[in-house]
Image 1 (cartoon, rainbow, N blue to C red):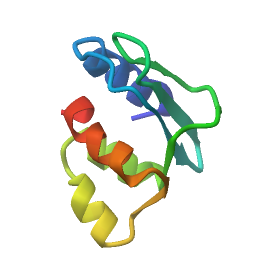
Image 2 (tube, helix red, strand yellow):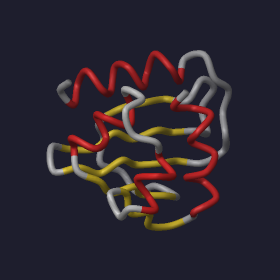
Image 3 (spheres, helix red, strand yellow):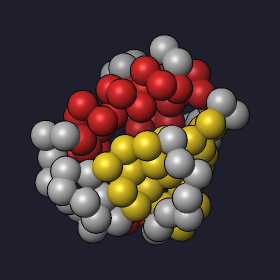
Image 4 (cartoon, rainbow, N blue to C red):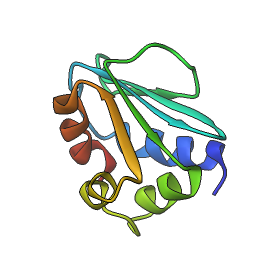
Length: 98
């Protein structure tokens, strides 16, 4: 998938959710996906804004996670996913990504 395809898939998933009160940024070598969880439904874009929580990972790992091939907790425990900022916000994301 491309960054635009991942962003579109995340937008589709977020459109069915309610706000979660925080912002999150997935940062990869191919760009970012920013989720504004203060909006209902959460807004998803490729804007590189400051976020309450930044999740850094390789693009291929983000692709695998979005497509259900890689569990977020497994990615974190194996060092494929690094979290900067509020860890609690990252935990809220599980409900958005499913």
